Image 1: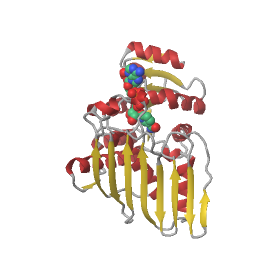
Image 2: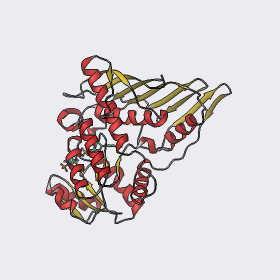
Image 3: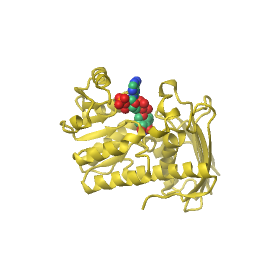
Image 4: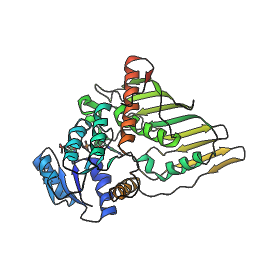
Length: 332
Ligand code: NDP
């Protein structure tokens, strides 16, 4: 399978190019798009990509099967629509778009064209989260009472750009991290948040956007979810906890890009460390996408999953702005 990269991004350089090559071989990435011709060329040269282009049309007429969209968030919609019109399968970064309505339009367009459309929510590909989900599905925590998500991190200096000062590019911690937490909660609980309350703030890193948020979500089952996202926390450890009538899972350091962390399940019989597989999260995401293109199975997170994670983030943003409880609007 051959890929065109829409976006000469950090995430492509740090994770995804390697993943495409691991899954589909050395020649898997043939094109890269940057808005700057010089940057397109230098990025292509640095990463051994044959064609660096600055025109989306030039990329889409290339001999590629799929595109990976990792531009800033406000560009995802128009670029995905163009790729779908050109008959390319799409793996799109989160958040899918700036609005739920646009995300729904993208996903429906791909469906109508018979193309695979996926969202790059990496966390549900982690061996740790797969192990947590299996334990929940096996009834080891009983009925879920509550979930706590700790996703307050320190945005590394090399990423302290548009996320902190460009609301028009989709900056802010809610667009960046709440979407991941929403996807992960949906993945574990198998249900969609109903409504949310939230507060957001800026401790100085965010300029015109929030750099921290806390929210509470209600779930159809009655479970309560509490989440904390931030760009400003240097020393906090991430975590994901599920508390149920028969047991509690406390997973530490698992809201991250690596195959790391510890999962402890505590029940009446005591505490037990759950083992998990340490495969690369992004390789699995790409692998399942390629299988889906070949007609086998579905991507780890499909387009509807991307719409739903964005819908929860949009509700959190609105709740924080208005101070009201907001129903999540999944866009029909
Ligand atoms: P970057 O800031 O690295 O890249 C976004 C755009 O900025 C690029 O398309 C490029 O556009 C421009 N750019 C990047 N680096 C430079 C540079 N050194 N000099 C000049 N321009 C530059 O963004 P990220 O990789 O952090 O994020 C991209 C997308 O991926 C976002 O949607 C984000 O939410 C998502 N993401 C997802 C992750 C996941 O785990 N699923 C993790 C990280 C990000 P151009 O060349 O046109 O100027």
